[in-house]
Length: 255
Image 1 (cartoon, rainbow, N blue to C red):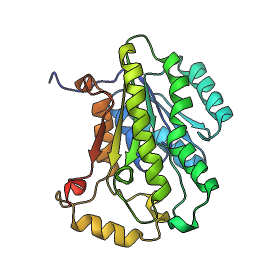
Image 2: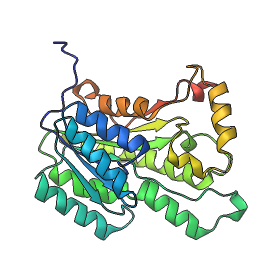
Image 3: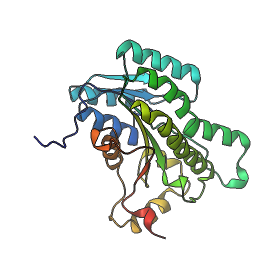
């Protein structure tokens, strides 16, 4: 057997926003590597249950947990369920996201607070509750970001700003938690064709432009992102601390 095989047997993971798209791909990839997985969702119960069922087909334990990660009470209840069902947590993937997609002049401070709170702010209470469940000397926290953190994208003002804040939080948390053996990183996904992209007014133009200028010759898939998350959760990434890994087929390196 290769010494580089990734084996997460015995690990427990929580994936927020894990019912569909990138979150589902991450949950299934971690399960295929041996982890038991809690799938968080807020609206799409059927999809979450289907993802949990697919995880069980891999021979792993799975649990679908409804919680709005923008609400502290929901987060507290979710972690209480984790303690009762698994007794521990080794991997936290903060993937759940939302936001307001409008021209800048149409935005309000209410839009700002909502978007930043759910896309960046929620990493704070999630991490604070996850760390006590992580066994001494080992833990992985991965946040899912996007290219809007560093690039200007139409209608993406608030989401982009919130993702930039998320990446900054990752760096600061990484410095504080690395001495405990808990590694904090982020993955920044390129344009991925998921249900979330349906909310973009310029969806078709965005997809076509991305395809045309991606050196790899195709769009990024949820599985592409999930496999990088898997790497960050493995011992192969034990010296990767506070980084944002871009998964976009080379799209972002072009001027």
